[in-house]
Amino acid sequence: MKLEQIHIPVLLKEVLEYLNLKPGDVVFDGTLGGAGHSLAILKAIAPTGKLIAVDQDSQAVSTAARLFKDYRNVYLAKGNFADVKKIINSFNVSSLDGFLLDLGLSSFQIDRSGKGFSYIRNEKLDMRMDEDNPVSAFNIVNEYSSKKLKEIFFKFGEEKYSERIAENVILWRKKKPVETTGELSEIIEKSIPAKEKFSKRGHPSKRIFQAIRIEVNRELDNLEEAIDDGFEVLNKGGKMAIISYHSLEDRIVKNKFINFSGKCICPADLPVCMCGAEKKAEILTRRVVKPTLAEIAENKRASSAKLRAIKKL
Ligand SMILES: C[S@@+](CC[C@H](N)C(=O)[O-])C[C@H]1O[C@@H](n2cnc3c(N)ncnc32)[C@H](O)[C@@H]1O
Picture 1 (cartoon, rainbow, N blue to C red):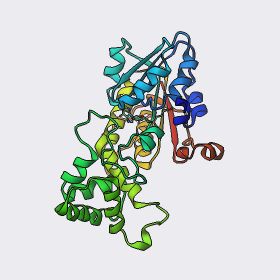
Picture 2 (tube, helix red, strand yellow):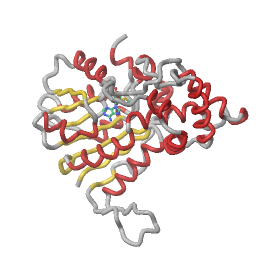
Picture 3 (tube, protein in one colour):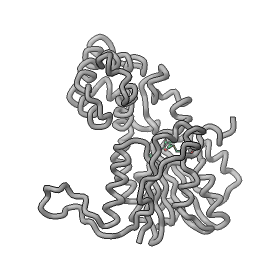
């Protein structure tokens, strides 16, 4: 199977439209994955531009290195997009014309990494995108207290039966550790009343797996840091585009972009503005951009995608 077929880039035409790149531009792709967006960016900035593309999953980086072996204007690194400043500096770059994040997991990671990202497959509990991360899903599920588990299930999975699921994890642990995605799914299913198992909100394991994955990979903290630091190193006129796949990510992107556009995002009950809102950017996507039905028909993974973009002033 060819590399391009493993992960189909989501909202590719729209990303290129909003980044509006030209030859010579310097671009950071913080989520290299199957390199679909990177490849299109490289073509748009050739022959003099520079693409710095990173992924925290070393397998994505080594696969892309093979794909890009004949390209001279691409700089690849294994790293976290939250370290955008450090990474671009290591390639002697201090500012950017374009910044892209396509969040979440690649199809390869979900279907073939064996890291237990999906409740549909019975695999070892791991969920680390970065294999050097000392904390895996196994540690979280087997070492966190009931209170802490309940908190992450509720905060990152928005699961109303968080407490019951957490308690049942602790009960299971009294007999043996929870070692596989299958065992975790069994615990989750047992904790949910039968009539709610297949409600409109989808399978409950999906929400709990999402919660654990966010905790393992510090996904929301990394996103906030990357937006702030990426925006700082963006040139005037430079664009930032971010594709998110669930409401917790999209809320962060939306609020940061609103804040950069000068609107105060402080809670209504704060007597004075604490967020330091100041107009530094123009929002390019007045309404969030979603894939067309045709794109979803071709690529089911695109269905929850939301793209937002800004231009630095
Ligand atoms: C949806 S895929 C990207 C697909 C890519 N845009 C393409 O066209 O093939 C997301 C990728 O981002 C990586 N990733 C997620 N969070 C990251 C982070 N904080 N730092 C670096 N890479 C990250 C994942 O390992 C995964 O390979």
